[in-house]
Image (cartoon, rainbow, N blue to C red; front, side, top):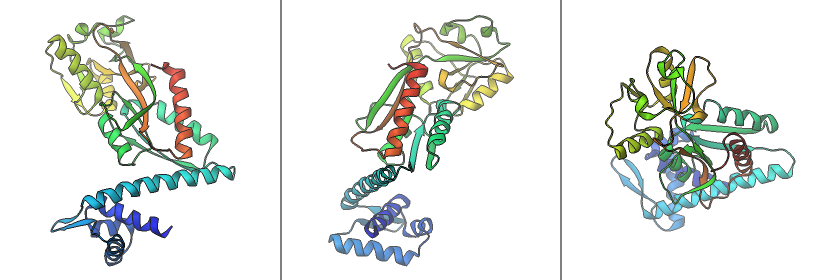
Length: 300
């Protein structure tokens, strides 16, 4: 495994952009790390880094090598999981990038259920929105991404898709809570709005719909935190917009779907990096998560 250690060193220098910072993260001496990089460059017969005044940057050869490194590390994780399977003990690690809308119920439920069956599997859950989650797949920081309406990407392979109708979220004493069933968007716009900001897919979806209708609006409050917006809605008569999967079971809050004539449903996608062979633990978790999402919401 010595060669894999050297490749890990290269990847860390590329990530940190500095021998010193990479050495600190790896807990080795900078001189030892420099020697490892120089030995590898000698073996390859070419430099893989540009030495700059402010640090280290991969050159074209280095970019090729780092892509190879990521493939090698991913393959090793898959082999380790398969070896663990052969011994009858499910081990491994699952790295998931997901939108905020799924951290309240879906992801905790699924991680708990999976770990109840396979307690030796560990998890990393990163809260990333649409574009950032796809970037995490490409950089091998995540095995899976669970996101709302990610931008079109040749790198994303969808394992499961379904539709999520946007809902208004208000406190129980709000005028919009007095009725049931779908609510028209024009009714929502007559109240102060507490909306996700433009870093979140929900806001992009709303902005596009209102731009097509030529409807001006100005939020009273904007935030990148869906949890903050829900808590604000508990405290004053604002209207927030969220998808059903992110709305907690709280009797103090009332949610109503927005009429689909005004706002089309959003697309929920569970995906992985196209062409990547997932580690066993991640593949099995993806199967279970897809089945659970299908039970909850149905496939698109």
